[in-house]
Image 1 (cartoon, rainbow, N blue to C red):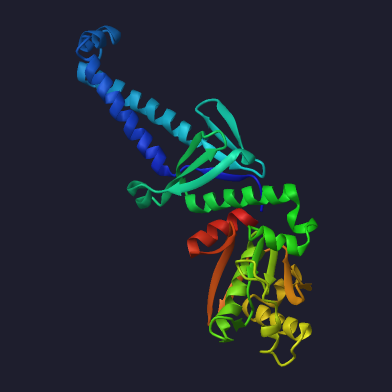
Image 2: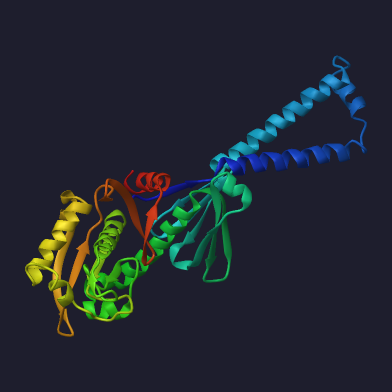
Length: 327
């Protein structure tokens, strides 16, 4: 992912600010009209060269132009920069001030949409810090994607500081549970509940691997359930012509190339480990150098990793994500 990620406010914010300032200015002009004789002031200021109604139109138009320019500059200069360690807030009219919020200080981040924001296809992001302070990023386009991006950075920073995925043995990683860089799947083909081969499990596995490829990489462990129970690969082996690790890897490669494409095989590495006497497959995934689609039945789907789960993006969301992720 390329940093910084620049986040701009929606034009809705500009429209709302212009309307608010225009209403406030109109009210102040109306209120002040009771305290001064503007017709006499206008006559003196123009030395009687302009009629009062003309001078009033010119003065009002000039004032509106100044107000619109100031509001536009405020909207244009206000943006947010998302970096690996901080979020920068930039605000100002003629001089831009910067404020920094450390990623490590973020306690929670959520997004919401008002009715007006839904109509304008934007939203508000609410950030709460460890000191219970709240920060609002209002009228942000693609607010949900930005929220998930920040969540991923938070998870990434936590893992990078502890170096969990590289230095901690697999049994300890399993005990720690799933996160942004680690996911478990009970099996690749054999459905333990239905006691039969389930092709849907293969697609689910490829969806998860695609999400790692499209994000920041990770580890995908087959043979371990979500509740950390070790099932192993023995039931999967029994469904294959060659019932061992080589047969399993051959079948894995076949569905990978069919659903994701052979070009992306270079970004993954398949290993096997024994835990509690059972074989477990560990797929180490590196970030892809370009977007990866899951292809099946003449359709293409795009997935990313959000927190400890896999999320599908719509076409417009995928386009925005691809632009911010690969440039």
